[in-house]
Length: 267
Length: 63
Image 1 (cartoon, each protein chain N blue to C red):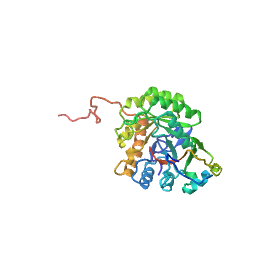
Image 2: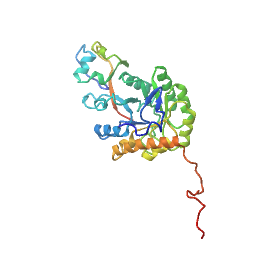
Image 3: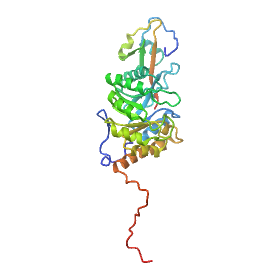
Image 4: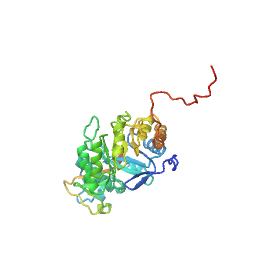
């Protein structure tokens, strides 16, 4: 495991709220065919941050289904989400429950506004961010690709803002690179693109915009071979990051020869 | 409890309840009448009464 990008090529590790993370790729733990498939894919991804959800214990078979039976909290940074919450109050309740589990005070905050698109309720998101930040939470806020909302979330105390590439689970890739670049340019806190990445090229293009990282779940979990896709995603995130740091050549709408135009034989 | 009525022995404590369900307290979080119980050592002292609302949650896979 571990990153393959040499430290000298990407010298500044992802740092959120003063904590350094060893990978710019964060992964979810949902929708896997089995727990062993999940663990293998997470290992292949090289991710340090893994997201988990808070749900009721099934009292009829309580001893077999909690993710902590399978995921070693010593090896990964557990980032609890508030997925499935449709109001600020509900998300706040879930965040508090997650913190009481005792691992950390971080939360991937979701306040969903619509069942069909799973787009965020941005007003509720800002309120919940204010409340949780005041309680000492490190809030990473899942939001849409709207600059103004992103700015308000930063003002409200979010330690990272997580605009979507496209709707959760859609695999459509990044729909609005301009909006993502603008958010990255205008925010001081890290920008982690969350949701919508369907394949490795999507991840690479997202990272080429200069954002700080990507969180994905379905793109890996729903691949026919999650371990191969997790590996591809790790490499794509690293490739996109390096391409961004390298600075791409300008686009031209005419050809420019790569070989010398002088020294040609007489015709 | 977790959205469904449940009969338990009179004067049970939360620790006894979790034990009877074979739930490891370290792997769950308990909310009692909308108050999160952050001190697991307190479960043995937390008695349960008729009509109490208990939620027992844990981490599951999610994105």
